[in-house]
Image 1 (tube, rainbow, N blue to C red):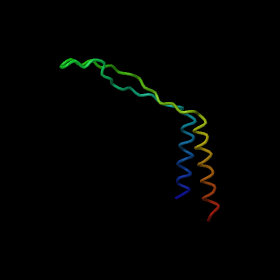
Image 2 (tube, rainbow, N blue to C red):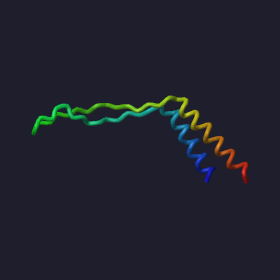
Image 3 (cartoon, rainbow, N blue to C red):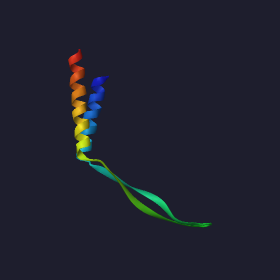
Length: 71
């Protein structure tokens, strides 16, 4: 079980180091006056610091190695 968690953390850490964020489009209402609605597409972004991926990667390696030494 711990080896699986370690592998997932390693993969997530590598992915977070490669991609430092993503963006998506969200519809927002600008005007809502009775039957008249005006909306606009707004670009939103989600970013995380690169060191977060490094911390997750190192944690995954530690969990993976520690689970192998127990047996």
